[in-house]
Amino acid sequence: MYIIIIGGGEIGYYLSKALLDEGHEILVLEKNSARNEFICSELGSICIQGDGCEATTLEAAGTGRADMLIAVTGDDEDNLVACQVAKYKFNVPRTIARIKNPKNEAIFKKLGIDVTVSSTNVILENIEEEVPTHPLTHLLTIRDKGLEIIEIKIPPESATVGKTVKELSLPSESILSLIISEERKPRVPTALTVIQAEDQIIAVTSPESEEALRIALRGA
Image 1 (cartoon, rainbow, N blue to C red):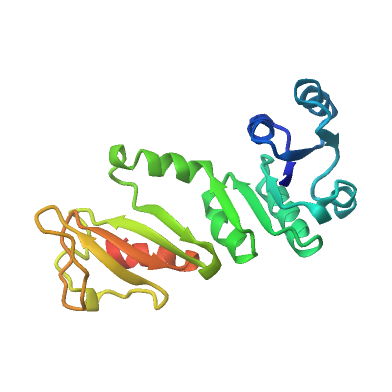
Image 2 (image 1 turned 120 degrees about the horizontal axis):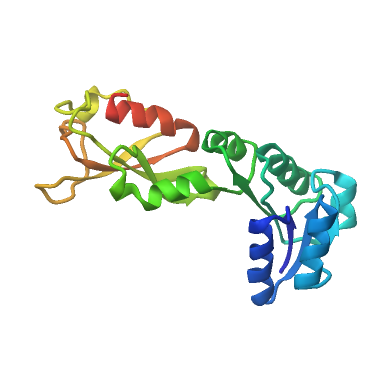
């Protein structure tokens, strides 16, 4: 598989090394000349100096035959532009973008980026048990349908505790699939199901409706 990586920082370097070890053909685009020389000295001539946001640079890198482009610079805007140019000008089948600000995730997906990776969200979701205030956990992304399966935990102080599902202002694109309670077996919710403190609710929703669903279920 031919994979182009935009950004030769620490993430780009170690990602390139891992993908090379798996037998993939890798090309790194890095603006900084010193970083470019370092990567070439460590991994071979797999890095060229250039701006991955520019179509001419991507064309010179053979983006038209790339199977995947991964943008991992430290700038969300650069990562978005690189992925969009790769997808819409060079028809790259898969684009992956690093996101520093989790608030940008929805717009990246809306603009057609196939996969987004937010280190902030990854860390929060992995320590969710130690961070009881963390409101929402991503369980699975169904990319071809534009849907996500998420888990939302209801805190004891939530305004929705004691309300039935039909009393909640759920987004039209969202479906509650399962409720896991501390004292009862998992159950499929109905319109008359009462929300209880500490319920873990599994739902299917669109990325754009995540925040509205969180507010509807937690009350804030």
